[in-house]
Image 1 (tube, rainbow, N blue to C red):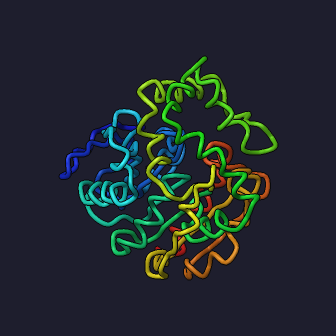
Image 2 (image 1 turned 90 degrees about the horizontal axis):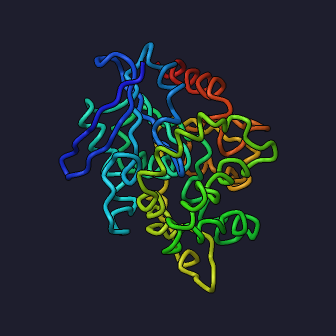
Length: 296
Protein backbone atom coordinates (compact mmCIF):
# COMPACT_ATOMS: atom_id res chain seq x y z
CA UNK A 1 0.00 0.00 0.00
CA UNK A 2 1.32 3.42 -0.96
CA UNK A 3 1.27 6.11 1.73
CA UNK A 4 1.69 9.86 1.25
CA UNK A 5 3.18 12.38 3.64
CA UNK A 6 4.87 15.77 3.73
CA UNK A 7 8.47 16.16 4.85
CA UNK A 8 9.10 19.63 6.28
CA UNK A 9 12.84 20.16 6.06
CA UNK A 10 14.92 22.45 8.33
CA UNK A 11 15.82 24.86 5.50
CA UNK A 12 12.18 25.67 4.76
CA UNK A 13 11.50 23.28 1.87
CA UNK A 14 8.50 20.94 2.03
CA UNK A 15 8.57 17.76 -0.05
CA UNK A 16 5.45 15.72 -0.73
CA UNK A 17 6.40 12.05 -0.59
CA UNK A 18 5.10 8.61 -1.44
CA UNK A 19 6.18 5.66 0.67
CA UNK A 20 5.71 1.96 1.31
CA UNK A 21 7.05 -0.60 3.77
CA UNK A 22 7.51 -0.80 7.54
CA UNK A 23 8.78 2.34 9.24
CA UNK A 24 11.65 0.61 11.02
CA UNK A 25 13.05 -1.26 8.01
CA UNK A 26 16.23 -0.30 6.11
CA UNK A 27 15.43 2.49 3.69
CA UNK A 28 15.54 3.00 -0.06
CA UNK A 29 15.11 6.47 -1.57
CA UNK A 30 13.82 6.96 -5.14
CA UNK A 31 14.29 10.18 -7.16
CA UNK A 32 12.23 10.86 -10.31
CA UNK A 33 13.05 12.91 -13.39
CA UNK A 34 11.36 15.29 -15.88
CA UNK A 35 8.49 15.56 -16.61
CA UNK A 36 7.64 12.88 -14.08
CA UNK A 37 6.74 12.80 -10.40
CA UNK A 38 7.11 10.43 -7.45
CA UNK A 39 4.21 8.23 -8.60
CA UNK A 40 6.36 6.70 -11.37
CA UNK A 41 8.09 4.59 -8.70
CA UNK A 42 4.87 3.06 -7.30
CA UNK A 43 5.51 -0.44 -8.67
CA UNK A 44 9.02 -0.47 -7.22
CA UNK A 45 7.80 0.92 -3.89
CA UNK A 46 5.25 -1.87 -3.68
CA UNK A 47 7.83 -4.50 -4.63
CA UNK A 48 10.58 -3.41 -2.25
CA UNK A 49 8.15 -2.40 0.49
CA UNK A 50 8.00 -6.03 1.60
CA UNK A 51 11.49 -5.71 3.09
CA UNK A 52 12.44 -2.03 3.01
CA UNK A 53 11.03 1.35 3.94
CA UNK A 54 10.77 2.97 0.52
CA UNK A 55 10.40 6.73 0.10
CA UNK A 56 9.91 8.61 -3.19
CA UNK A 57 9.78 12.39 -2.84
CA UNK A 58 8.37 14.76 -5.39
CA UNK A 59 11.44 16.90 -5.97
CA UNK A 60 11.23 20.63 -5.31
CA UNK A 61 9.16 22.29 -8.01
CA UNK A 62 6.96 19.22 -8.58
CA UNK A 63 3.45 18.26 -7.51
CA UNK A 64 2.77 19.62 -3.99
CA UNK A 65 6.43 20.11 -3.03
CA UNK A 66 7.81 23.61 -2.47
CA UNK A 67 8.34 25.44 -5.75
CA UNK A 68 10.50 28.54 -5.26
CA UNK A 69 10.04 31.11 -8.02
CA UNK A 70 13.73 32.04 -8.36
CA UNK A 71 15.66 30.03 -10.97
CA UNK A 72 18.72 30.17 -8.69
CA UNK A 73 16.81 28.00 -6.19
CA UNK A 74 17.16 25.07 -8.62
CA UNK A 75 20.95 25.00 -8.71
CA UNK A 76 22.22 21.51 -8.00
CA UNK A 77 23.61 22.46 -4.57
CA UNK A 78 20.09 23.28 -3.39
CA UNK A 79 18.68 20.06 -4.83
CA UNK A 80 21.41 18.05 -3.11
CA UNK A 81 20.67 19.87 0.15
CA UNK A 82 17.02 18.78 -0.12
CA UNK A 83 18.00 15.12 -0.38
CA UNK A 84 20.54 15.36 2.44
CA UNK A 85 17.89 16.91 4.69
CA UNK A 86 15.25 14.37 3.63
CA UNK A 87 17.56 11.46 4.45
CA UNK A 88 18.18 12.89 7.91
CA UNK A 89 14.47 13.63 8.34
CA UNK A 90 13.55 10.03 7.56
CA UNK A 91 16.16 8.37 9.76
CA UNK A 92 19.72 8.78 8.50
CA UNK A 93 21.82 6.91 5.90
CA UNK A 94 19.96 4.81 3.33
CA UNK A 95 20.66 1.36 1.92
CA UNK A 96 20.41 2.72 -1.61
CA UNK A 97 19.57 5.84 -3.54
CA UNK A 98 17.76 4.96 -6.78
CA UNK A 99 17.39 7.70 -9.37
CA UNK A 100 16.33 8.40 -12.96
CA UNK A 101 16.87 11.34 -15.35
CA UNK A 102 17.02 14.62 -13.37
CA UNK A 103 16.78 12.64 -10.16
CA UNK A 104 19.96 10.94 -11.31
CA UNK A 105 21.69 14.27 -11.87
CA UNK A 106 20.95 15.09 -8.24
CA UNK A 107 21.97 11.61 -7.10
CA UNK A 108 25.35 11.65 -8.89
CA UNK A 109 26.23 14.88 -7.13
CA UNK A 110 24.82 13.69 -3.82
CA UNK A 111 26.91 10.51 -3.90
CA UNK A 112 30.09 12.52 -4.50
CA UNK A 113 29.36 15.01 -1.72
CA UNK A 114 27.73 12.72 0.87
CA UNK A 115 29.24 9.23 0.41
CA UNK A 116 28.50 8.19 4.00
CA UNK A 117 24.77 8.90 3.62
CA UNK A 118 24.18 5.95 1.26
CA UNK A 119 25.53 2.42 0.98
CA UNK A 120 24.78 2.06 -2.73
CA UNK A 121 23.76 4.16 -5.71
CA UNK A 122 21.48 2.94 -8.53
CA UNK A 123 21.28 5.14 -11.62
CA UNK A 124 18.73 4.63 -14.40
CA UNK A 125 19.35 6.47 -17.71
CA UNK A 126 20.86 9.55 -16.18
CA UNK A 127 24.22 10.75 -17.51
CA UNK A 128 27.19 11.18 -15.25
CA UNK A 129 28.13 14.89 -15.27
CA UNK A 130 31.65 14.26 -16.59
CA UNK A 131 30.63 12.10 -19.54
CA UNK A 132 27.64 14.33 -20.30
CA UNK A 133 29.91 17.38 -20.36
CA UNK A 134 32.36 15.56 -22.64
CA UNK A 135 29.60 14.65 -25.11
CA UNK A 136 27.99 18.10 -25.03
CA UNK A 137 31.34 19.73 -25.74
CA UNK A 138 32.55 17.39 -28.45
CA UNK A 139 29.83 15.21 -29.95
CA UNK A 140 27.48 16.85 -32.48
CA UNK A 141 25.05 13.92 -32.15
CA UNK A 142 24.66 14.54 -28.41
CA UNK A 143 24.36 18.27 -29.00
CA UNK A 144 21.49 17.59 -31.40
CA UNK A 145 19.88 15.06 -29.07
CA UNK A 146 19.98 17.59 -26.22
CA UNK A 147 18.78 20.59 -28.22
CA UNK A 148 15.29 20.23 -26.71
CA UNK A 149 16.74 21.50 -23.42
CA UNK A 150 17.05 24.97 -24.92
CA UNK A 151 13.33 25.02 -25.73
CA UNK A 152 12.58 24.13 -22.10
CA UNK A 153 14.59 27.17 -20.99
CA UNK A 154 12.40 29.63 -22.92
CA UNK A 155 10.51 32.09 -20.71
CA UNK A 156 7.25 31.05 -22.35
CA UNK A 157 7.89 27.30 -22.10
CA UNK A 158 5.30 26.79 -19.33
CA UNK A 159 2.57 28.36 -21.45
CA UNK A 160 3.53 26.52 -24.62
CA UNK A 161 3.75 23.13 -22.90
CA UNK A 162 0.37 23.53 -21.20
CA UNK A 163 -1.50 24.39 -24.40
CA UNK A 164 -4.01 21.96 -25.95
CA UNK A 165 -3.93 19.39 -23.16
CA UNK A 166 -0.11 19.46 -22.95
CA UNK A 167 0.22 18.62 -26.65
CA UNK A 168 3.95 19.45 -26.65
CA UNK A 169 4.67 17.38 -23.52
CA UNK A 170 3.26 14.01 -24.57
CA UNK A 171 5.96 13.53 -27.25
CA UNK A 172 8.59 13.71 -24.49
CA UNK A 173 7.10 10.46 -23.19
CA UNK A 174 6.34 8.79 -26.51
CA UNK A 175 9.15 9.75 -28.89
CA UNK A 176 12.40 8.95 -27.03
CA UNK A 177 12.57 5.48 -28.55
CA UNK A 178 11.59 3.62 -31.70
CA UNK A 179 8.75 1.55 -30.24
CA UNK A 180 6.45 4.34 -29.11
CA UNK A 181 5.02 4.14 -25.59
CA UNK A 182 2.40 1.42 -25.15
CA UNK A 183 2.61 1.98 -21.39
CA UNK A 184 1.25 5.52 -21.82
CA UNK A 185 -2.39 4.61 -21.29
CA UNK A 186 -5.16 7.08 -20.58
CA UNK A 187 -4.97 6.17 -16.90
CA UNK A 188 -1.24 6.98 -16.83
CA UNK A 189 -1.87 10.19 -18.78
CA UNK A 190 -4.39 11.24 -16.15
CA UNK A 191 -1.74 10.83 -13.44
CA UNK A 192 0.65 13.02 -15.43
CA UNK A 193 -2.05 15.62 -16.06
CA UNK A 194 -2.77 15.83 -12.34
CA UNK A 195 0.88 16.69 -11.70
CA UNK A 196 1.37 19.06 -14.63
CA UNK A 197 -1.77 21.03 -13.78
CA UNK A 198 -0.15 21.97 -10.48
CA UNK A 199 2.47 23.93 -12.39
CA UNK A 200 5.43 23.40 -14.71
CA UNK A 201 7.63 26.36 -13.80
CA UNK A 202 9.57 24.57 -11.07
CA UNK A 203 10.29 21.55 -13.26
CA UNK A 204 11.51 23.78 -16.10
CA UNK A 205 13.72 25.77 -13.75
CA UNK A 206 15.98 22.71 -13.45
CA UNK A 207 16.97 23.28 -17.07
CA UNK A 208 17.21 27.04 -16.71
CA UNK A 209 19.50 26.73 -13.71
CA UNK A 210 21.84 24.15 -15.24
CA UNK A 211 24.87 25.09 -17.36
CA UNK A 212 24.96 21.54 -18.78
CA UNK A 213 22.90 21.92 -21.92
CA UNK A 214 23.50 21.91 -25.64
CA UNK A 215 25.29 25.00 -27.04
CA UNK A 216 22.83 27.17 -28.95
CA UNK A 217 22.77 30.58 -30.65
CA UNK A 218 26.48 31.06 -30.10
CA UNK A 219 26.18 30.38 -26.35
CA UNK A 220 29.44 28.71 -25.41
CA UNK A 221 29.02 28.66 -21.62
CA UNK A 222 29.05 24.87 -21.52
CA UNK A 223 32.32 24.84 -23.48
CA UNK A 224 34.10 26.61 -20.63
CA UNK A 225 33.15 24.15 -17.89
CA UNK A 226 35.82 21.89 -16.38
CA UNK A 227 35.44 19.34 -13.58
CA UNK A 228 38.22 18.40 -11.18
CA UNK A 229 38.35 14.64 -10.47
CA UNK A 230 37.21 15.11 -6.86
CA UNK A 231 34.07 16.88 -8.10
CA UNK A 232 32.83 13.95 -10.16
CA UNK A 233 34.29 10.70 -8.78
CA UNK A 234 31.81 8.43 -6.99
CA UNK A 235 33.29 6.17 -4.32
CA UNK A 236 30.23 4.10 -3.39
CA UNK A 237 29.16 0.85 -5.12
CA UNK A 238 27.03 1.89 -8.07
CA UNK A 239 24.59 0.11 -10.34
CA UNK A 240 23.98 1.78 -13.71
CA UNK A 241 21.00 0.48 -15.70
CA UNK A 242 20.79 1.88 -19.21
CA UNK A 243 18.05 1.51 -21.80
CA UNK A 244 20.09 1.60 -25.00
CA UNK A 245 17.20 2.77 -27.18
CA UNK A 246 17.16 6.14 -25.39
CA UNK A 247 17.34 8.72 -28.19
CA UNK A 248 18.00 11.68 -25.87
CA UNK A 249 20.79 9.96 -23.93
CA UNK A 250 22.53 7.49 -26.26
CA UNK A 251 24.97 4.85 -24.98
CA UNK A 252 28.04 6.97 -25.85
CA UNK A 253 27.49 8.51 -22.43
CA UNK A 254 28.64 5.22 -20.89
CA UNK A 255 32.06 5.34 -22.57
CA UNK A 256 34.87 5.60 -20.01
CA UNK A 257 32.31 5.84 -17.18
CA UNK A 258 34.38 3.51 -14.97
CA UNK A 259 36.98 6.27 -14.78
CA UNK A 260 34.57 8.23 -12.58
CA UNK A 261 32.70 5.31 -10.99
CA UNK A 262 35.33 2.70 -10.10
CA UNK A 263 32.90 0.44 -8.16
CA UNK A 264 30.36 0.12 -10.97
CA UNK A 265 28.09 -2.62 -12.27
CA UNK A 266 26.71 -1.68 -15.69
CA UNK A 267 23.56 -3.31 -17.09
CA UNK A 268 22.65 -2.46 -20.68
CA UNK A 269 19.10 -3.22 -21.85
CA UNK A 270 18.99 -3.22 -25.62
CA UNK A 271 15.34 -2.47 -26.39
CA UNK A 272 14.51 -0.22 -23.45
CA UNK A 273 14.14 3.55 -23.89
CA UNK A 274 14.56 6.50 -21.58
CA UNK A 275 11.29 5.52 -19.89
CA UNK A 276 12.48 2.14 -18.66
CA UNK A 277 10.92 2.78 -15.23
CA UNK A 278 7.52 2.56 -16.93
CA UNK A 279 8.49 -0.03 -19.52
CA UNK A 280 10.29 -2.63 -17.45
CA UNK A 281 9.67 -2.15 -13.71
CA UNK A 282 10.07 -5.89 -13.05
CA UNK A 283 13.45 -6.05 -14.77
CA UNK A 284 14.56 -2.89 -13.00
CA UNK A 285 13.46 -4.29 -9.64
CA UNK A 286 15.41 -7.48 -10.34
CA UNK A 287 18.61 -5.60 -11.13
CA UNK A 288 18.36 -3.44 -8.01
CA UNK A 289 17.47 -6.46 -5.88
CA UNK A 290 20.53 -8.35 -7.12
CA UNK A 291 22.82 -5.50 -6.09
CA UNK A 292 21.17 -5.16 -2.69
CA UNK A 293 21.62 -8.88 -2.09
CA UNK A 294 25.23 -8.91 -3.27
CA UNK A 295 26.21 -6.18 -0.83
CA UNK A 296 24.01 -7.28 2.06
